[in-house]
Image 1 (tube, rainbow, N blue to C red):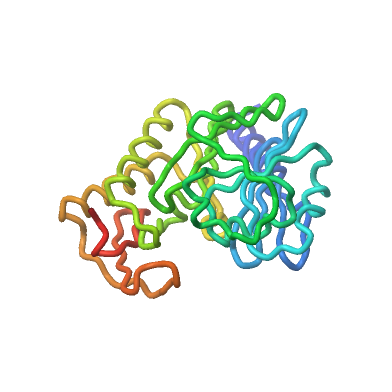
Image 2 (cartoon, helix red, strand yellow):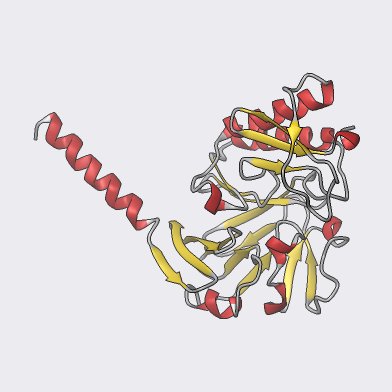
Length: 271
């Protein structure tokens, strides 16, 4: 086989492999589920929120619960019949909007202040280093505060994947929301994520996947960290008003950009 034929064959294999892991497996009026990686599915809602489903040999893990998705518990059962654990990356309505469908959820205790008080199920609290052992897959909890006090990311170190919720945004990270965190807190979270990526995490799947349709790499996190440091030091590029007002956030949010990274912030709550 000559070089041209070899390259053509490799291209066909790559296309087939990519298609296999991006094929839609379920769709209704609220959401669409597609294969993301081996035993991993991305669930994209029509209002652009995101959930991830990871299956091991013994159990499955649902990361976040989206906004308003009718009968989400039954929808998940179309993908896996295995015992299910549900973890939310943070307690904002676009990530915990369907927790009522589940009798138990996991979250970081620092976010209970934001949790919908109408939830009647059982709360399990997680901390740095906790492991969800799914059988053949171990998913590790890592606390990454700033977007919310209890924001966490979930790490699959075997596959090099991180499921980040909104801890590092989807191109934009929102740090203008109450309760406010110092910008230095976000700098430290970025440094922590950079170290994890130096140690083998290569892909960050964010909390609003429909906006980006890709995994972020270390360069994105480095740009976020550099931008946050510049805001702390007063050396950031010129900021401009953010067009969107959120009821739990600043009345006058600003935004600043470096490369792929944008931070939305409240000028009165940087330090």
